[in-house]
Figure: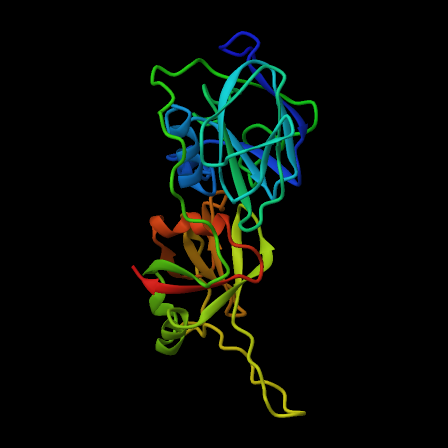
Length: 307
């Protein structure tokens, strides 16, 4: 696809572990089996776009765990937000969470972030690849949208937006830390399928982010139980026991739904979730808390509170 700005493009040198084109998604297609998809950290992408004068919904690049390098083929403004990572433009450090101007041929490198998981690159004009069902986002579950970026990919940049680049040097932002993350959630439509003790446990214990997570969802493990007695096995961790043990027919799912599998462990569904599911939903993460799951590394702890 030809760039709306002649010659304006981003050339991918090294994509890192996974780099995807994402915007704010394609809502409204669940009836035909298509999830909304879009950036996992919607706030970070929207901020990057605002910094360069784009509409918040413009497409950018979602970068997992850094290791990313690209060359700008024309002069352009860009911003990188999300997971805190060191940025280098032609070898010199530049600031994240700020609009930066790059000359034609300049190379941007994004290091592995010190915390968090995903960084977001926005360029003024947006990434102008072909839209599918109204969105340029990659849906990793259905395969819709542009594929994972590869070395040598050339991403066209769209037309200059009418709004100027804001005269802001830096914006305050919250960076991921080591402390447990509070997540606000509503009782789910199948909360009555669980015992009162299970509901109480869900909203009181700290859960650990497992290594079993991606853009579809993040599985949580219960806290480890430590025994101080030599030779005594610790008691099994608390699980979310069901009061109703029958089969649940498949029903619609949304991003933020917390499904509980038969072993009593919860999974938080994210942007590329299936549109239906057969496990009961004990809770639904409030929209304002959902972005946090884009940045939680395995081993991090979260606790749920009533929204």
